[in-house]
Image (tube, rainbow, N blue to C red; front, side):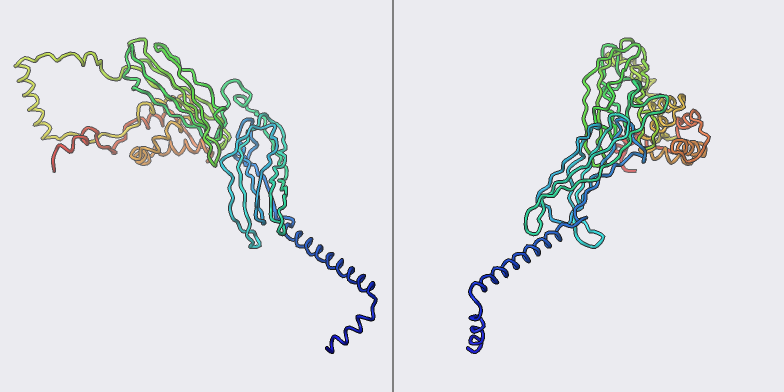
Amino acid sequence: MVIFSEVLPFARARSPSRIRRRGRDLRAALVALACLAFAGTAHAEIAPGDLTLTVTPERNGNADPFSREMVLLRIHGVYRQPILLEEVIQPSLANFSWTQLGRDLWTKTKLPDGQNAIAFDRVVAIFPHHPGDFTIEPFVHRLTVNDGGTRKVVDVPSPPVQLAVAHWTKPVGGPDAKEPWWLPAREVTITDSWSPDPETVKIGESTRRIVTLEAHGMVAEGLPPRPVMRTRGILTFAGPVTRETIITPTGPIARATYQWDVRPAIAEVIPLDAIAIPWFDTVSRTLREAEIPARQIGGGLPDRDEDAKPPVAASPLSVAAAALAAFGLGLALLGFGVPARSRPRLGRATRRALASAAAKGDAAAFRSSLAPALRDEPDLVRAWRGDPAIAAGLEALDATLYGRGAAALDLPDLARRLAHPVPGATRPDADHARLAGLDGPR
């Protein structure tokens, strides 16, 4: 009561209008302070550098690309705020073809100051239409974020990117040449299959050839048309061409499948020449060649009509002579044994491909033809490494291709040495291994 008795006289001393005026002033000041505090909080939520987006072009071999050569655009965003909704607005890319590689990737990351953030990644492959200096306009990431308790839409642009597309200056090939077909890729592989084997085909029969061409760093529309396969003495019927693009994180892989039905028209062995497919290696920045291997039609197995004839009955004297010869052969085998192993050797198609590349002086095609044996024939590789002449030749081949210094390379001599059966190294004979189970325990 003492307090109230002291306060109330003080309150009564002021007029009601003056009290109301001071109350209004106090409320206005409180509202202004609240607005300032909210504005300060909102400004603290999104600061410069909290939302960043960059676009980085990845050039093959750190060189300016040529027309229709793939360039990867790596789009990377780092965001401190939680993202409620998002949308990437892509520029028109008027001078490029493009394809997105897979889905967007969202991950958690740590900033240099130790704070947590969200990382956004997208990869787009672009293919310039023609040479020149181009500006890739900003990509814009439209984000809906939580800004001080309210939803806010923020556009985060990337800086523009300058990209130069080079002119082809070499005397042959290039994007604008009509021949050969322009095929820029990181890697080109060719597989060749026949059904049945072409060496077993005779007049009136046919075999189907299927060639699959794969190029890494291209889309299927950039692969060449079906190669021309003609030679004297055969009839060819071209089948459909199928194309597909396989999307991978490192870039698209283009695949084309070519098909022919082949029928011999003469009763001779018909050689079918190799078909070269030139391509531009975007890693080493050099022109190379892939090859559809040479084959032969006919001349493989003996005449099956003769095999199908009924056997002629043998005379008793012939039977006795055959039995005596078989008995003598058995004694000889017991005395000397049967060779159970044969020396490994490159296949006939590979030997021909090596000889063809050596005759042309094409070290890249030579290395490409030899690659399957280096990968799948450990016995051959082990023996080659033990041969000083072959080892030196292979080392000179790699030095020539990959620029590790000057080396004397004699491709024809290396092809002849690689074509010989390997001395000292053996592999189990197929028939002996197949029948070993019938011999019983040793």
